[in-house]
Length: 320
Image (tube, rainbow, N blue to C red; front, side, top):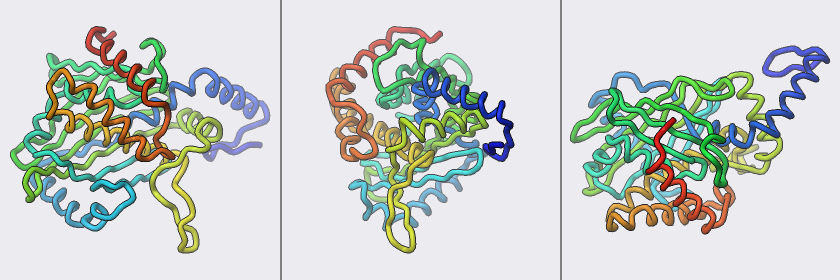
């Protein structure tokens, strides 16, 4: 008798489960894991108002020490949580960009696609601004070049849930994903800081998962992802033991990848339009290589070539 996720299985059921795991590992897992760990979710922030902006400023004050002294070598605080059915990551950071620029950028669904395509697992993103609300078609796949039909597709609904001269809240959400995952979203909150030209943001990622999703993740983490770690350092007996692994490690890696994509996009805006995309790619790759144990996946030239091809495809290929 085998017990998985609180369920007792007979010998026949155990054999069937092992066959399923082998199928997932060989056929579905390389793309599914990229989707599960590269796209995120979190229950909605609900009704937002100016009090949320005040709360975010209070969070900035509370994190002053962590933002100035941390292993990231940038004003960033990263955390993750995991429950029986949800894994989530949160990044709090100070951006060296004025709030007006951040707000104008992230109120536009098309600019989100320019950010998301920098992530190594994002194969395609196309925004539709002609629907109400707007939508984003996002396709996620492997860390190598691949046809779009081999990638997972997800339809995000894009909403600006609050926008004022002193606060921005944006949410991208999707109800369903592959392998019993659900409640996907990407959320961003931003406020201007008293020191001129800087913005404080909260970026949140998570997703809900069921039994099938849990099994797929466990299979990946026991094999292809067994050496992968996140950024949080665990302690045992009061001493630092190791970096967090498993599902929390995975969500932390992708929280960092998406945050660095935001940095890269904003850093490119001082370039001529024709140079901005290449600048973003180079910035993102260099930034991820600052954390090689967690984020190194491919060398520079394969990444640049793949992303330039994917960006061109994104501009010319309409969504399905």
